[in-house]
Structures are given as structure tokens and as C-alpha cells.
Image (cartoon, rainbow, N blue to C red; front, side, top):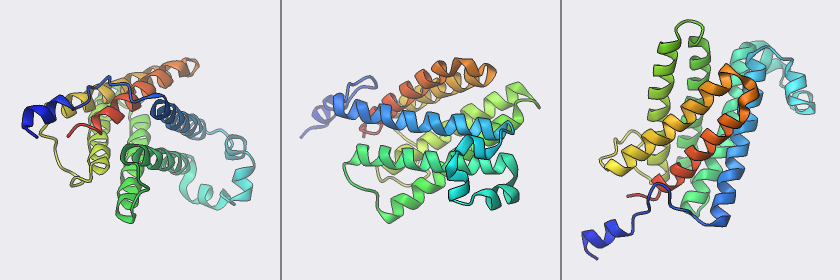
Length: 210
């Protein structure tokens, strides 16, 4: 097969993956939304037993909360939701369950993403522009890592494909805009959902581009 023929088969950023895959995108977007809502509530000091319900007592999470504080505990809870989301994303992208190596990589960048949200929230009252710049740059790097893991590439490999780079930038901007609007007004959760759905839709297609 010639190089032009290979390029011709590359999906575009807006390629529709089919109903089944689109439903999966909606499902893991929903998982992330639940995680983010709980994360923000915990970060804002809401009683963890209220946020997590019976799971807080059943899993005996009080000890973790007392050791980490509200912000650290919120980040751990978010990381768990992101881990589940990213495992589903990986399985959907590859058609195979994750290997041990991939699980470790997913755990690392899920924890990284949770830390990014935590640092961003802490930076907002300090310097809004610095917070925005950090959030955009850090999420772009994390999305790049996640795409590498999907493709079984080196963890920190920089993409040499212009379409992949463009797609990662667009999906990062989409998520950042949704998050910024939501943090500014939590009644605008729909904007966060829309931004995240666009992010995940494009990310799936970027993951298919070689």
C-alpha cells in the first residue's frame, strides 16, 4: 500500500465513529462529569459524607480524608473517576483490555490530570491569567501523553503529525473553555459537559490517526 493510500484512510477530527462508539464517548464523558462535580464540591468544603453518600462510610474513607485534607481528598476522588474513564477510553480505542504496563501509564496520567485540576483551582485566586495559562499548557501535555498511550508510543513522545497536534490543541481548548465557564458559574454545567463531549469526540479520532 502506498503512502498516499494510507493517508487517504486517516479519519478526520470530526469523523463519526458509529452509534456504539459514540455512546461509549457519552458514557465516559458522564463519568468524568460526575467526578468533576464531586471534586469541586469536596474542594469547596462540602461534607464528604454528603458528596459520596454511603460509599464514604462503607469504604472507610474518613482516615484518608483526615490525612490528606479537603483538597487532597478531592484530588484522589477525581483521580479514581479519571482512571475509570481513561481505562474505558483505552479499551474503546484499541478493542483490547489494558495490559499491566498500560494500566500503570493510565494511572500515572490520570493522577497527573487530577493534580492539574487541583493546582489550577488553587492558582485562580492568586493570578487568573497564570492559572489559565498553566491549565491550558498542562492539559495539552496530559492529552498528548494519553494519546501516546492509546497508540503504544513512548510516554513522552512529541507528535510529528500536524493533524494530531492540531486535534490535541482543539480538544484541549474545548475542555479548558468549558471548565473555565463552569468554575465561574456552576449553574453552567451544560457548558462543561459540551466542552468535555467535544474533547472526547475529537480525542477518539485523534487516537486513530497515525
